[in-house]
Structure formats: C-alpha cells, structure tokens
Length: 159
View 1 (cartoon, rainbow, N blue to C red):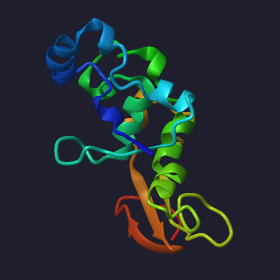
View 2: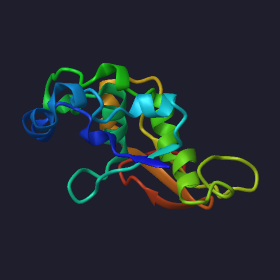
View 3: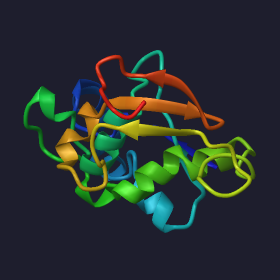
C-alpha cells in the first residue's frame, strides 16, 4: 500500500529550489507521480506528513487535485499537471483506502450497514466547489459511531 503525502507535490521552495535541481530534469518528472502510480493499479491511501506539514486533510486534498499551493498563497504554476488526482481519488485515499491500509475496511472507511457511523458534515461540497477552495473547508459536525463528538460552536445547524 503506497502511503501518498500529496502536500509536497507542488512548486514550493523545498521542491523547486532543492529537490528538482538535485535529482535533475529526467528524474524530476517522476517526483510525486501519484496519478501514474494509481493508474498502474497500485493500492494507495493519503496522509499528511504531520510534524513538518499540515495535518489538515482539506489542504492536502486541494494540493492533490490542483498540484499547487493553497489558493490563499497566491497563484503558482501547476507541478506536473498530468499527475493531478481527481477529487474522488483524493477523498477515497482518506476514507476507503485509508481504512484498508489499517486493516479496518470491514468496519470503517465508508458508510454501509454494519460499519461504524463515523462521518463529518462540511461547510461546502468538496466535489463541486472550486478546487482552489477545498483547502478552506471547515468541519461543522463530527460523528463517531453515530454519536456527536464535536460541533462547530458557530454553526447554527440542526441540533
């Protein structure tokens, strides 16, 4: 199972100024070749590189889909655009595929009868919003095992 950390797959100083010059143009084409890996049939999940990068999955999903730094950091060129993931691939990497990576696909990772009702409610539809806005997504409600464990104090939704 490939554990993909897409946040690095963008033009930012550690890639543009250090990694690309170090590996050279030919090998640089294969840096963070996540779409090629998935298209080849490799099992995968997505994660952060917490400790040296954000833990926020929405910023990571945005980068996986756009191959650019978050929109709030300005306009940047796309890093290897052919390696962008679809929104579905990115979300699956954090849900069904992540559950499989932890040998927990039988009880979590998707919503179906017999599985834990672990889910979140978001402030936007990350499948249809502008891709450059995915990173600003806020969690409004968190359910674990069907029970509410967290609610955004500013959210006035159903109680």
